Image (cartoon, rainbow, N blue to C red; front, top):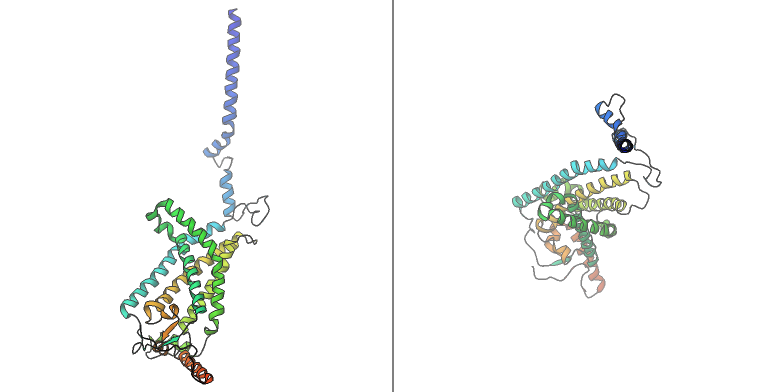
Length: 352
């Protein structure tokens, strides 16, 4: 009887140990090739599939996928990584240096030279420079431009500036709101740019005297008065930078915003590059336009607030345009036989 019990126990132990050995083999046997490869990778070890995959990607093999569609046949696309490196290593630092340098130069120029005054002072007589429609078009474009510029700059530089102030959670919420606003209002900017082009293009074509204006820096170099029409050469350059840059921003923004037209990742990466460069260039040049239209030149800001400028300002900065307006006013007076109000010229008012 005892012998039978001992035999049963022995059989039980054999079964238990056999099961444990089988489980151990099932768990550790698949790991043996990796252990061999780790100990001696040159001695016929099994290569790491992840390492081999990335080695193939770096050598130009992007891999394949059975999913069909735009770019879905490519397993890994390296353009995103190239764009990330460009954004972090070139666009962000050089863009900051460009904008910062221009702002510093503008401040230094103002401190040294001060505002450009109206020669002889204002006369108190006003002449209409911009109509209500022209001013509405201008401020509509300005409002959209700075909404998109500020939200874009937050997305580009916010992690460096706002995270220390708002914290990661606060910046995440701010960045999300900026992204939605940027994408929502971005398409409207194309409408604004086209309105600007159609409204002001007739007065921003090259005309006689523009080269002379540039060579004399608008009167800062060479001395003396520089003749100009409704817009001088500097204003024309800004107009075309704003329009052409705005069209690049709008086209590239639509490619990024509406990724439903079959554009691949290569096209979107190029659009990212163009969008970022164009935005920083237009924003930087706008600093000079804003300075000249406000603190830089006395009497200019009123042209876009109430539409009128002083006659002395018009004679000093846009003499040919002023002469054209006076001639048109004289023609109207002759036609009205009684001298109604001259087109484009208001009655004298008290000087502000």
